[in-house]
Image (cartoon, rainbow, N blue to C red; front, side, top):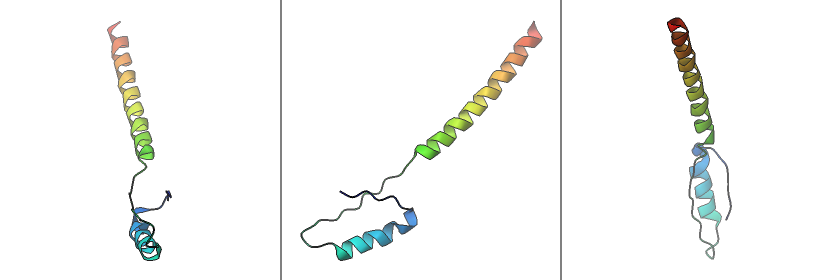
Length: 66
């Protein structure tokens, strides 16, 4: 098993190169996966900012009641 990290635009070229150069004794299979951690991390940062703003507004509203 070989793990490669590359952009989606290069996937077809790498797949073609492997298919052309692999020996018949070996089976080649390309299984693309995606690294979702950076996207999840960004969404968590945005969520934290929104929740912090909501909390600040709620605290201000509470202060005006007392």
